Image 1 (cartoon, rainbow, N blue to C red):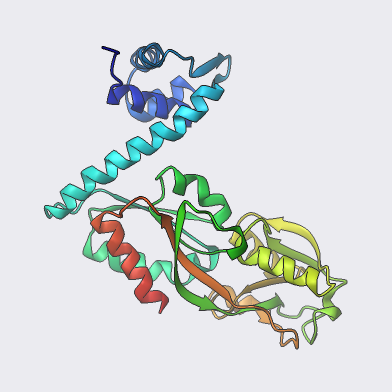
Image 2: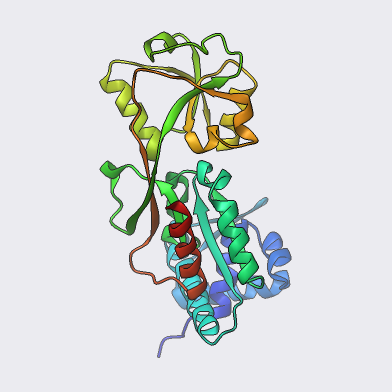
Length: 298
C-alpha cells in the first residue's frame, strides 16, 4: 500500500513555498527548521518527486513543486473553510474572512461594512486585500480570498469564477483644484496633458483604454499606478489628469483636493460584481460579509 500524505507535510510545504525559505517559514509557523526539513523530505519521498531547489538565499519550487503547490494550498484552504463552517454553524463565531475590494470600494463602502461586521462578530479576523481583479485572480483560485467586490471586463470571462452584479457607479475625469485645464469641456482638450491611471490590465480601466482607442484618442498615460491611493495622491498634488469614481470625488477627505471636469464626452459606468470561485461555498461568516456588501452597495 503506498504511503499516505499527511496534513503536517502539506502545511510545511505550503509555508516554505510561500515564504521562499525554510528559515522564514520556521519563524511564521513556530516549527523548528529541522522539523520543516524532515516534513518536506518525507513528502518528496511519498510523491517520488523533488519539490524544491535549494539555493544559498532560500528555496524555489521545481515545475512539479509549482504544480503541486496550487493543489496543496487549495486543499488546506478548503479544510480551513470546512472547519470554520462547522464551528460557525455551532455558534462559535470565530475563524477568518478574507476579502478583496477595488480601490474606490475600499474608500467608500468597505469601512461601513467592516464596522458593522466587527460590531456583530468581534472574534472573527478579517483580511482585506485592495486592488483590481486581475491582481486577485491567483488568490481567488487558491481559495485564499473568499470573494472580491470589483469591476470586471466581460470580454475576459474566467470560467472558474461566478459574477454577481451588485452596483454601478459613475466615473469622471479629474484634476486638482487650480489645474490649468480645470475649465476643459472635452477629452480632446486634454490630449496634451500627462495622465496617470491604475494599471489598464483589467476591469474598468481596460474598458476605458479600449474606448479611447475606438474614438481615436490616446491620452498620454505616462504613469501607471498599481494602487488607487498612489493615483489619487498624484492627481491631487500635481498636474496629472486621471479618471476616478464619483464616490471618491465626493469623499469628504479625498475629494476636497479634486475637481470633476464637466465634459461633453460621456464615460461608461463601472459595474461592480461580487466575485468568487464557482465550486466553493462561503462559510456563514463570509456569507454574512457578502450580504452586508450587497446591502451597502444598494
